[in-house]
Length: 59
Image (tube, rainbow, N blue to C red; front, side, top):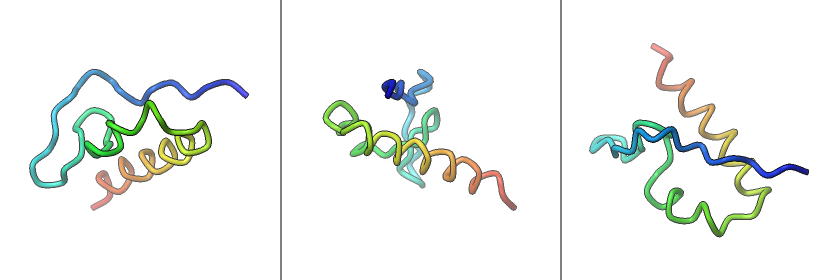
């Protein structure tokens, strides 16, 4: 199974209201833990990031 690449898009700014990175939608804790996460954890987080982005676009 191939590794999941990082969700980082090099827009690293933490939104003070949501606490999420404006580029990748991760929290600071998720960013810090990324390197030590298992592939399964990374895939689960990638799915959650997609849902976070979609939720922000919903009215």
